[in-house]
Image (cartoon, rainbow, N blue to C red; front, top):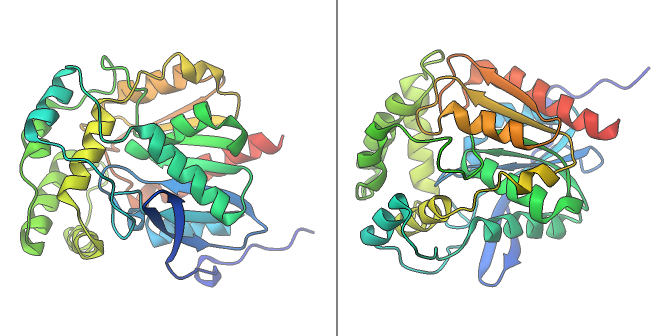
Length: 308
């Protein structure tokens, strides 16, 4: 009989640690579980620190047999900051698809993630990305196929401009100046949450406020957010390259996503051979606790396909 898995409360959780991954860039990371389990790398989205992979979700994943690694992307939270200045004019040009170059591309962020695996001595990992994180793990699967065992892309898209579009009502908030005070940041985060959150799974206001406050306290870089935004807006269309992905893959998307339309998830699943598509009714552009068991089930099922 196989040994029972530890309960979520008994999962071993590391302190926050640091890993040098590129010139001038260190990533802040944390692990859940034991290194002998299946390595699972969680990659978060635009300006979102690793704590947006909720502690409860990480413990559930560890309890299902994963050695979970979450981290702050460059220009986020307690990780190192990138270089290069982005003006409002640069941002508008990127939104319009006019020529230009980002301070760094999504490929650099994928390289960061691979550098973290190198630091941990992990040859291949199951990778899961949310929003921008989905774009990063797709890039990993394309550019570093030997490092990816399976992939789950959540509420993301292929980079093709005709899919995964953003609701026009969000644009003013996306390009508005960043809030400087903690109170203003929380207020703006709550307002954005009402626009992009899951209508079928409304978030408790106190939890949303606490997460926003924690995000601000970890460190918010206004210039870093702009650098990440331009990296997203100037990402390549990966539709053709995704056809080369040969690892088990799943795509999760909410039917009510206003930040990245569900067409982005459908296009991602259509581009990857034999990818599983899971569209969740009532889910927006967040990760509601009521769906944690579903996420764990899909991630575990996808990883098990790699074993087979």
